[in-house]
Amino acid sequence: MSSLSISETIKSPKAFLIKKDNLINSEVKLIVKGQGVFIFENLDNTIPCIFKFLNKDETDGLKIEFTLNNVNVNILSTLEPLIDEKNKKGLLNVKGAYYWFSLDAQNQTLYAGIGETRIKTSIYKYQYAYSKINKTFLESLEILQIEKESSINPIKLLRDPVTLKIPVLIKNIDELTMNDIANGDFLPKSNLSTVGQKLYDSVSGKKFILDDVDFPDFSKAIEHSIATKGKWCYEKLQDKSTEFNKDNPTIKETYLRITMGQNNGESPGIPYVLEIWPVGHYSPIHNHAGSNAIIRVLHGSINVKLFPFLSGEIEKVISFVSRDFNKDDITWISPTINQTHQLLNLETSKDTCITIQCYMYDEENNGHYDYFDYIDDNGKIQQYEPDSDMDFVAFKALMKEEWKEYQRKNICKRILFGCFRKN
Image 1: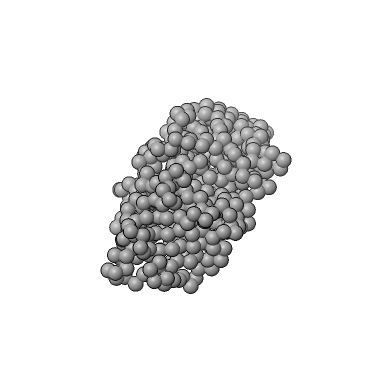
Image 2: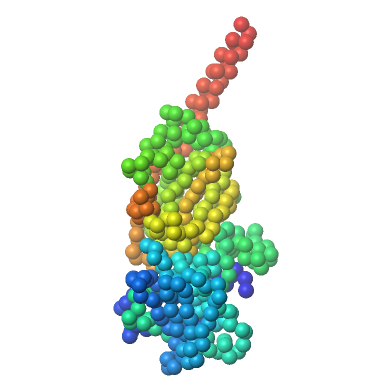
């Protein structure tokens, strides 16, 4: 299988939001027989989460039980346990946790996990011995049945199962090689949702650059403005030191948001944002309102940590990816993948990092939650309304003005220095 097989996990329209009104006698049909991912919350950690995948006449299937200690799976007709010896984890006593179970008849594989639906968050795996009998059995499963006494709050049913690792870097068609596809190291742009592709095409062009013909010293001007007291970037960063923690000013937990265009009601905040990250500066751990996003590095580099879910109990939720992105690298966010992260321009970096972020809700998203939820220093989940520090056109003009002033002063200094040397 290639990375192309993960496309429908990313393309969220191939999913079914499960509301209690959708359930008939605690049952719902799978989108495709023999495959899919069931995503759910647990409302009471003292009660196991129990559900079944059943055949059409409900005479056989799989019984799945998430307990505090592990994940148990049994074949209903024979009571045979399908054991993963490495599985030592089940339900978490952690706020914000949610769970998933993946059924995959084609690869005859079962996975269970916590948080985002991907192999890196899995806690249970069972690989059947490949056989027609096993495949026929798994392909017969078409009903998801939730035990009524269970504390499950159903969230979503995905059409396609969890299979391979999910790449965080995107490549366009002209850059992809056969090795890229075979190794699954890069996500083809075509695997993004329609909305994701639209965002990618908006910011991935060769002329979409920071230091352009109009202002070749743009990045230098920004660096100067950050480093110089009294200049706009320096002062704005000082003003924002309480943005995420009102009672504890933290200058390094700041970044600048320079917006492009206007909010058309299709994204959390204005959809196109130039984000400026001085060396050592970082964001709180946050998510992205269930929106799609594309992030491209225009200057410098940024470290990104991905988390399985958002929780105030930070010490209990471990990042499963820590990755450095360099100039022209492009990564992505979907409503169900890469949603929760933290960005950091490492102290070892030489340059300010400047990224372009663009956001858009899926077409079927009618909720439009217009906030990014983040974790403050007290471990509380807070709402951040994506705002604008300045419009891009005005910001570029201001940086030009500050840079010209800086150059004039340097010329005057050199002239004066030359006069002193002559005398």
